[in-house]
Image 1 (cartoon, rainbow, N blue to C red):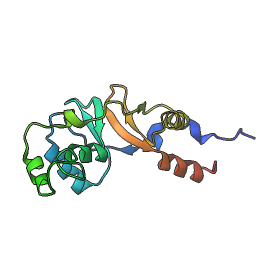
Image 2: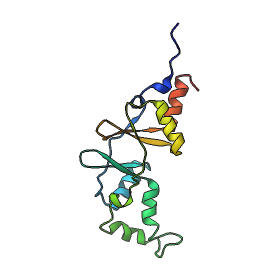
Image 3: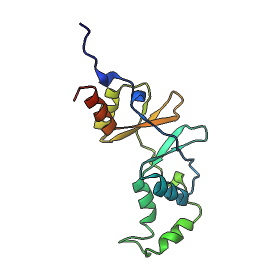
Image 4: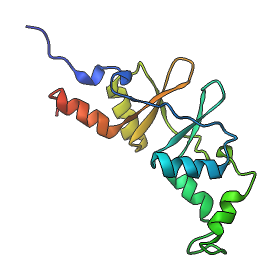
Amino acid sequence: MAPPVDDRTDKVRSIMTPISRTILPDTPIRDLIQIGSVEGCGDIPVTAPEGTFLGVITPLDLIGSILPTVGIRGSGSARCITCHLKKEGATARDLMSREHITIHEDDSILNAMQLMQRNRHDDLIVVDSQNRVAGRIEICRIIQHLRIAGEL
């Protein structure tokens, strides 16, 4: 009889969600808000022109870019959001989180789980051997994979 298969040793690439949309560091904030409002409220990877991972813009990064202008403690009023969006100069480079955790597409799902637990982060950006963005792996996708495989 063959030993039981441990699906936690499967490669991250086998269950990652591919990422087709990345942005460049010089993308204006107004474009980021447009992207986030049309395409959904997820993290947007920031890459160099050749696709090398640099960081992410989270929905909270976008809200934080508006809060200094408007909001409860802001000096402006809600109508100033339009003024903020028209403001030139602020870019993805100014907002992106550079500490986002990455994992290589050939790493194991077990390693992804350990990184998530150790860093208290529920998703990781998946990169290839040239550090180009390949996808994203979320804890919910890992749980689903393990449940289907019969490990949960």
